[in-house]
Image 1 (cartoon, rainbow, N blue to C red):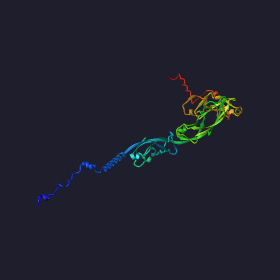
Image 2 (image 1 turned 60 degrees about the vertical axis):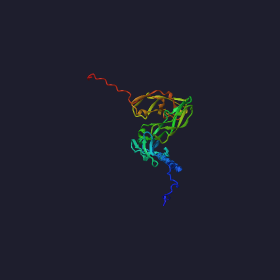
Image 3 (image 1 turned 120 degrees about the vertical axis):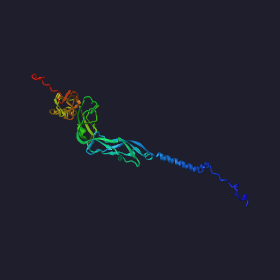
Image 4 (image 1 turned 90 degrees about the horizontal axis):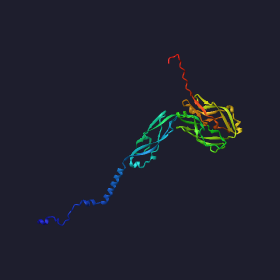
Length: 346
């Protein structure tokens, strides 16, 4: 056999050439681009939804005061800041209002009580945890709750000037006293309550107004906070002078004296009202509650501190004609030093 005829004829067959790298890269290019974009998006989502911490400010805290106790400061609400941790995707949908309110009840005991804040006091979404409270505890000063009935005073309540020839007469308050509750120390230091100002400008006749009672001490609560005040305005056309009216202090147990001990009182009103005055039982009062708990002292009384409680309706008194009164509380004199005995050695 001829060797040339038995050899495969490679000259006429197509050569198989390996594909280049560029050709492989271009193969299925659209599908590869889409897959790459999806991978990048997934990476961004995974990396962005990491754990992080954010802070919420002024989360309200409501303090439930135990029965039989009261807050000395009167504060039953406060706020705290909290820092929480969680996934970005979860925290993004949480607002301050979603956290709600923290409610705490301090133990019922006298004194300064501190309550440590706990994560269980808030209802948080799943996967969200509290890292820190600021402050970490809430403090409140508690005292036993006491109740007392206090008189309503119109001292320093009147402003402005009446019309000429008219005078402030009897002032009536309804109710004249109210029941007040609060911390023991506050109640014991409160002897009376005051009202909002009453303007007398241009007044020439009796009138009635409603006024709020001023609870000017922390922790006080009243059964009623508004009173009706009837202000009698009387004419100065008739006057009657009562000689030697005694002065009586109220809310005072300490030794005291007045100089002068009695005063001449100029009563003002119409003739019919003046005839109803019982001059035998007439007296002037001064509220000495603020003098009860102070050291021995002496001071000059102001006309506004004096009142005449038993005047009939339509009768007042002339404040401008009241004399200066020296009010001495306790002993204002230092005992004299005894004379030396010449027979004893000095």
